[in-house]
Image 1 (cartoon, rainbow, N blue to C red):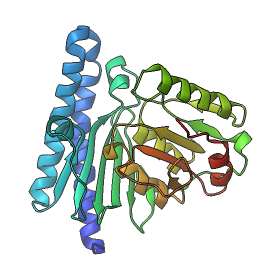
Image 2 (tube, helix red, strand yellow; image 1 turned 180 degrees about the vertical axis):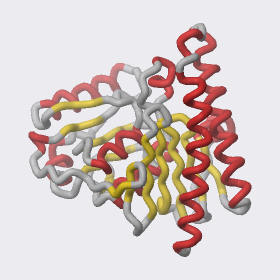
Image 3 (cartoon, one colour; image 1 turned 90 degrees about the vertical axis):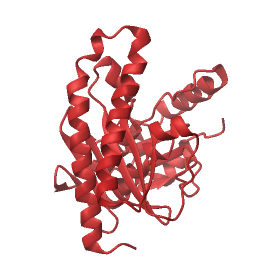
Image 4 (cartoon, rainbow, N blue to C red; image 1 turned 60 degrees about the vertical axis):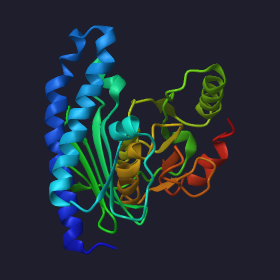
Amino acid sequence: MAQNDSLAKFLDTAVDAAKRAGEIIRNGFYQTKNVEHKGQVDWVTETDKACEDLIFNHLKQQFPTHKFIGEETTAACGATELTDEPTWIVDPLDGTTNFVHGFPFVCISIGLTIGKIPIVGVVYNPMMDELFTGVHGQGAFFNGKPIKVSSQTELVKSLLATEAGTKRDKPTLDASTNRINSLLFKVRSLRMSGSCALNLCGIACGRLDLFYELGFGGPWDVAAGVVIVEEAGGLVYDPSGKDFDITAQRVAASNPHVKDAFIEALPTSE
């Protein structure tokens, strides 16, 4: 495991990279309205790419031997295998649909894994200037103040977050809405913020009590959030109740009190 001084350097560099990329997103955020539909996606991809380049260049200067996995590079180059080497896993713009619509739940997610275990996590929402950080064994923070998961013990009083997912075929949507239907009877209410990384941070700071998502984009959506949740005293696991697998595109998170009831209530068969 990395020494504390190197962990501090990893964190500082990641925060710096996230804030710099945040400026690009902030500058572009209110311009998206004028873009024609055809160009909208390209424009978002351009912002994505500019942020990812900035983040990777910034991290590579400091840590030239580390490996890198990013949403944009993976989209361009196919799947990237996660090894035991120190690996930065980056989503330069989580919440692209929100970005296009000017809905201010967008963020930059930067995670570092060593031995395939997430060690450092930084999630930054530049529109609300909210910075979430976590370092393995050192706690989780929101704008520099320590955070803890909620102490909610009852499912029926819990606020649940999930996402509709990117697939729009009927079987997937039916499974997804059936799952939501069955859960709505058992929780207080439901939120879909449009960002997997911010949902995880919501669990970490107690804004949300329960979160699950099946079929999100890839490890870049969760690499940072996992550290932040766990360091805030929360649990991250597979929606079936099995151990969390960062490569599996399935995640659930909650405080420890409601985990068992949540798994029981969560129908995960597709």
